[in-house]
Image 1 (cartoon, rainbow, N blue to C red):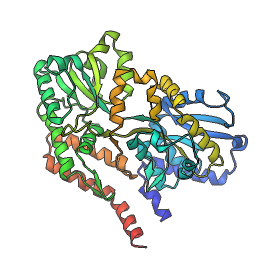
Image 2 (spheres, rainbow, N blue to C red):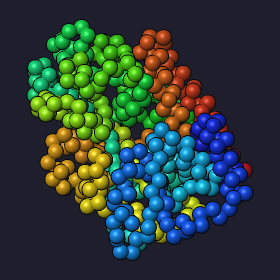
Image 3 (tube, one colour):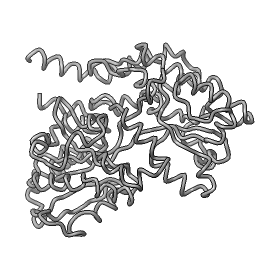
Image 4 (cartoon, one colour):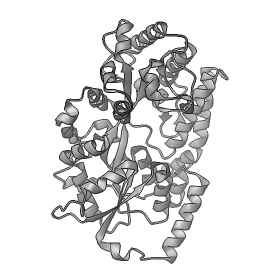
Amino acid sequence: MRSCLPALVTGSLAALLAALLAALLAVVMPGCRGADDDVVRLWALGREGEEVARLLPPAEPVADLPAVRVQQIPWTAAHEKLLTAAVGRSAPDLAQIGNTWIPELVALRAIEPLDHFLLSSNLIRRSDHFRGVWDTNVVDGKVWGIPWYVDTRVLFYRSDLLEAAGFDHPPTTWAEWYEVMQRLKQLGRRDRYAIILPTDEWPQPVILGMANGAALVRDGRWGAFSEPEFATAFAFYIKLFRDGLAPVLGSAQIASLYQQLADGTFAMVITGPWNVGEIRRRLPPAFESRWATAPMPSPDGDGPGVSLAGGSSLVIFKGSRHTREAWRIIERLSGPELQVRFFALTGDLPAHTAAWRDPMLADDPKLAAFFAQLGNVRATPKIPEWEQIATKVFEAVQQAVYGRRSTTEVLSGLDADVDRILAKRRSILDRTEGGQ
């Protein structure tokens, strides 16, 4: 079965060729580390790669911790670079990865399970983390990564416009949400909308589907988008476009998310914690009292709706000669005090729940919705093919929104696409379960 596993990993032909080249170089140029033998190599992504070095030796002497060499990887290149390094046996000792990438690396047998470290650790406990985010790191009953920072998506809204529409609180049910949006649309001109939902993004319809109990993928083998749970949520989502409550626009057609929120072109958007800081940076301080955040509405109002379990985790790669040292680095970066410092540097929300008691987080009303929402988040299907399936989801949204096909036809087509994507996975699983 080992030889079949890489075929489960989605990725471009360029990434595969690069991986093969890296594997060849690993054979013909062994032992290239040399002076790095006593240094733990950490790959970190985007701005996190710039800031994490401030928290680790040798930048800050810490007893009993090894020296760490941090390499910053752009987010745009990270996915392919990590897969290439894993296949080419040139991976770092540990790395930051997006939570949804863990199943791919597990399928490649590229990372170490961490359960044995957790058994003896006094610093990292499952109970100190948000359950849904922790679950993104569990595949086949084993823990493969430790949440480093978390994110999820909530409802950003113009509180002053909701008050003008007769609502002194954010919507808590889908019915109330729809009513709010109708009233908001009636307040403005024809070119103003209740909500912005870019048609080339998959998280919004997936969030609504999961909130309604949708599995998305059945048994890890078949698409489940035509089933009633997702179909009902999808119909609600498409209705927002057809009723003129959301404009039919892709991300590139949105002139300025922040300015259009400020001028009332739209009153709501579903987005993540990074936009708390962006709104504050891009809009004047006087605007602060005019907007707020809230957990996602739920279909029936029984607590907050479900949202995505997002963020980044820290993993240890197989083949590392510094697994114990890498684990000590993970323990350090997981501590609540250091996570508060990291939040101050980057705006990334802490994965350790105790860090949220710090006044910098606890006293910020815009962050309260995120803490509440993180108590009700779900992982996307933990299969290597999810990234490819996600692309098909927003393609289905565009087909339905632009009226090319009915929602029933669109979802049937989406399931057919997903079934094709998962065909090789089914074949491998069937052979494995059949004892072949």
